[in-house]
Length: 273
Length: 208
Image (tube, rainbow over all chains, first blue to last red; front, side, top):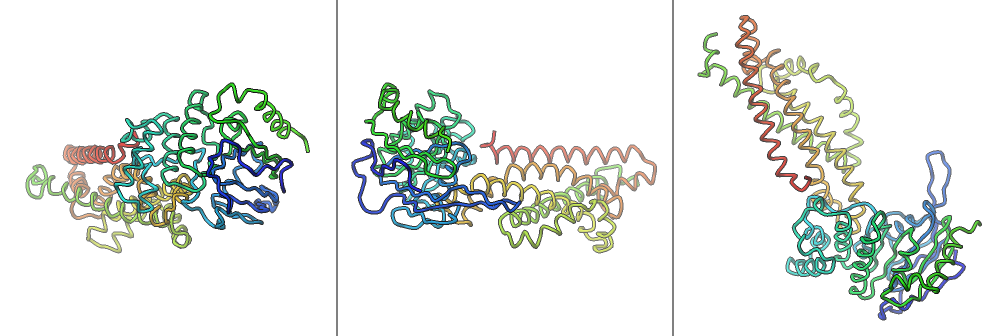
């Protein structure tokens, strides 16, 4: 099902390298059904089609349990669709892979590895030489502002620091697409703002990496996204561009144009259908 | 009888040494067997289907009820007495490792897969380290109980060991001798536990 206001083009915030050719993510008529123990079939996702261009930052919002994370898990390759196809840069998604980095809501840092070892982990798994690994890790530590914590254990870090490391660990792997499932839930405004800055820095440095981020927070979506997609009752209910310039100040995301987008999203969110 | 009252040859020391060796050997064998069993059940579905029922049934058997069978099967060999330690350690370690490995898979499996890691690499680099803290905890408990099982086995059917010495003193109504042997076993058990705890703290220093 197409959204009632589909806008496939990225907003002006997307890097200029947004390429033609295959989409970064191409979701075609995808549905997902779950069969419960009782035999009841639950429709997680119903005939959703969605294209994300290279370099585009898409935030997906919607009520809890309406299919946002299910869609993300299918793009990541953790769940197979019941119908339809998903392609990443023209390649069909069949299983998880390093071309799709995932930042989870839960803490996934390896507790027995130091911060730098966590960031280097994916690189090591892919056989990247030690010198190159060290260089990439140093750059990322600088970007996330944790150079002094390179040899700390994850348990010695605060929640915000751990999220930064988790994001850096995924970026280190240089995925084509970054998938994020409510990565900043539970952070206070100050930490959230810091995390947004880190994420945007990493994303903008990475060139044409596409981001698919699930969030509950419309303000967060307005701060980060080129597009906001609303998933409701398993369907694509709204697809609206966020054509605000970057970097986006508080004034900008509380201005008339942002408020107009906010109103459209919230109306679609609360609309009974 | 008097020879047992000294720490000389044939006395408390040699019998205690025999018990120490058997507990350490039993715990080591049980640890290896239990770890492989637990890991196999967590990581290999076919192996789990084959092994789960016997492990559950054996887990329900009272450990001490096995002693007569061990004596019957293994006579006067070491296995007749430290079989209980091996059996108990293996079963408890297997259970702990299985649950820890499954929890590690649930927590890190998707993340590791999204980094492009193979199943073998996930086992070595993710599951094995994640199972260390619970295994150490269970190992301490199994070793602590191992002293008891070993001594009981020696009391019931051993020809050597601290348990056998306890029975000899008890037969001679030498209460002080019984208490002396038990104190010696207790001191060795406490020192052993302290060493395992120290090694454990170093091994899981990331978890503090």
